[in-house]
Amino acid sequence: MTRRISWALLAVLVLAQICYPLTTGATRAGLTVATVVLGWLLSVGHALLSRGPRVAAALVAVATGGGFAIEAIGVATGVPFGSYDYSGELGPKLAGVPLIIPLAWTWMAWPAWLAAVRLTGGTASRAGGSAATRTGTGTGTGTGTSWTGHGGSAARLWVRRIALATVGLAAWDLFLDPQMVAEGYWVWRDATPALPGLPGIPVSNYLGWLLFAVLMMSALRPLAGPAAERTDRRDHPMTALYLWTYFSSILAHAVFLDLPASALWGAAGMSVTAIPLAVTLLRARRARETRREDHQPHRPGVDATR
Image (tube, rainbow, N blue to C red; front, top):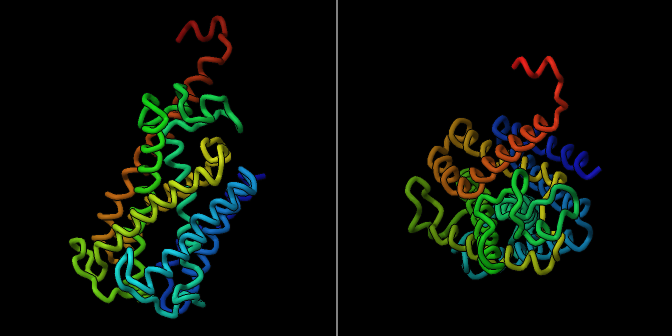
């Protein structure tokens, strides 16, 4: 049930994003709002259905509540992102912040977290897994293989996981901010210094994203509990969401939105998490296929001729 609902929401979200370059003006702004709401429903709904109310509540508290708080502080004070203002195109505001903005933080925070868990060994062969996979310290192979390795202390594992989740989320803004600024959805009062090729957005914005992402990911695990420490087959839609966001954003910025610089910056930034994740999934798939072949019954007189 969890996977069916998540796949269905993901399909609608993908369709909405495909339509984005085909629209303009108020239609595009409305589609942007609808896409963010769909993304929020997908991530929070998946957290609720796959792990229960505690994890979903933690995600909403940390990402939605925390996202609104940091944005409200940012609009009022310029800290930590820099001085900026939102236009009125993204719907109603509270404290100067469009209500969909904290939903966007939540939308990508959850798949980024699950990607980091997967890459640091928190993989269970089935829901619940073994004690080793629940803690993310097992030495399994195949679907339990960790890109970063299993050795070392729990503290090093925690640091790796937080770092991957942080970069996995914050690097998304290398796509998001140039796209939204180009549409006029928000504007920076002082956009210097800026990254090469990305005028109109100060470097302080990306540093602010990194800072808040560290705080968010560090708070998510203690609040969510041990259920947030593992991944399994129920999380395939979230993995697909993360990789779709990465590869489709590169294509959209490079080809459809005329934003080649953000295509390059975003591709480089999100690759820290996205490429190891894709490689890990391919390795896991090959391992499963190998195991299936090894367990196929031997047919005398047929296999012997091979």
